[in-house]
Image (tube, rainbow, N blue to C red; front, top):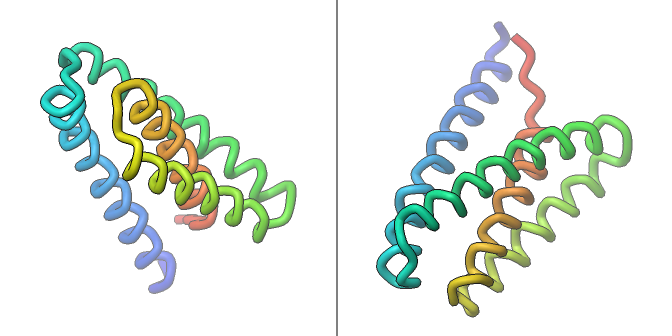
Length: 118
């Protein structure tokens, strides 16, 4: 395996581990600050994870089929937009909607742009 592919694999694994740390933090935030039960927080984060998988698949198709640059721009826009709105407007229903949109945008953006072939 070439050195560049090893680094891409390591970066991809690190990114996925860091994204995994977001789930417990968001569970605590939804429970303590937004005053929702843990079952509601778990369901919201399950939908977040499902949309991450959908974004990964859709981003890969868009990256292969259409312009790579515009696929990345769309992912950047979705991610930045949802992060900015989440930081200023963190009340119960809208926070979860933008969190789910962030999951879609991040996976739409990051993983399709890192082709890893072993």
